[in-house]
Length: 364
Image (cartoon, rainbow, N blue to C red; front, top):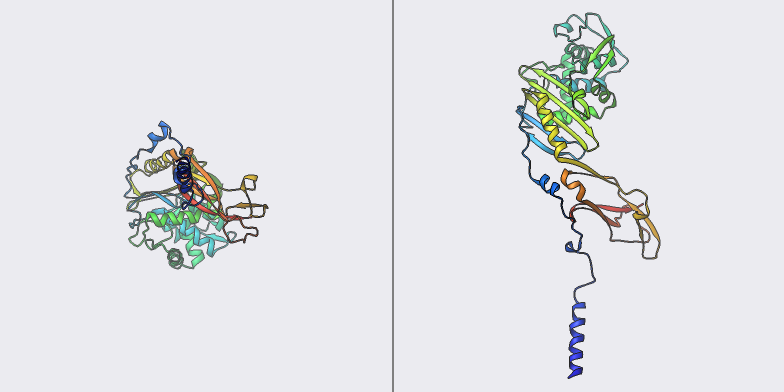
C-alpha cells in the first residue's frame, strides 16, 4: 500500500514536467507598473481644440503622426505661403550671388518695404526680402529675372509641386495674391514647409525675427517667432480670399510639432490652441543602444558580442505614458559568427509591461 502511494505521488509530481516545453516568460510574467493618480487623470481623452480655420493640420514631423486633421486636403487660397515654393525654385534655378534688378513693371505689384525702380540686390538679399517681410514685388522680380518671364517661373513652381506629389496645389503667380488658379491644401503645405525647413539657407531665413539686409531693417511677419516658445519658423499669409494663413514649426525637448491653419479669422489663436494641445498631451521618446556592457550577448561558445539598433527609435506617446515606458532586450539567436543583416534579437518597448513596439537587434 505504501509502495503504491509512493508511485502515485511520483506520477503526480513528474507528469506536469512533460509536454509543456521549457519555462519561458509570458505576458503575465512581465512586471506590470501601477499608474499614478495623475497619470490616470491624464488618460482621460481631451477634446481636440476648436479652431476658426476651415482647414487645419497638426502633426508630429519626427514620426509623421497626425494629431488633428480638419479638411486637410480641401483646396484653399494660400496667400503668401506661395512664397515658400518661390524661394525653393529660386534656389534650384538661380545663384545666390547673382543680381536681380527691380523694374517699373515689377512695381505694379505693391512692395511692402519700398523697393524702387532700378534697385539692384543679390538673389540672396532678395530672398530675405521675399520671406521675412513677405514682399510681393520681390517675388515678381525673382521670377522674371530667373525665368525670363514670371509665367515661365510659375510653370517651374507647378512642375516642382507636381514632382513632389502635391496634387492639391497649383500656382498662378509667385507672390500669392488671390487668384482662382492659386490654391493649395493644409496637407500639401505641411509637406512644402518641411521641405523648406530641410534646406539650411531657407531654414535660417524662416527662423529670423528681424535682420538688417538690403540696406533695410527687415521684420518678420511671423509673430510666433517671438511669442511662442520654441518656434523655429515658418511663414504667414493673408489675403481677402485666403483669409489668415500660418504655418508654425516648434521644436522643444518634448518633441516637434507642425501646425498649419488656412482661412483662419485668428491665425495666432488657432495655432497656439493646436500647439498647446500637442505639448499638453504628447511627448516624443527616443531609444538607442550605445556601446555598453548591457548591450552585449554571450554566444553558444561563451564569447561576448556587442549588439544594437540599426537606427535609433522614435515614438510619440501620450504624456501620461512617459513614466511607464520601459525597454527589454531579448536575444533569440546567440550565434557565434553573426551576419551583418541577421537579427540576433529584439528590442521591445513596453508600456506598463504591455508591448508598444519592437525593433530587431543586430550584432555590431
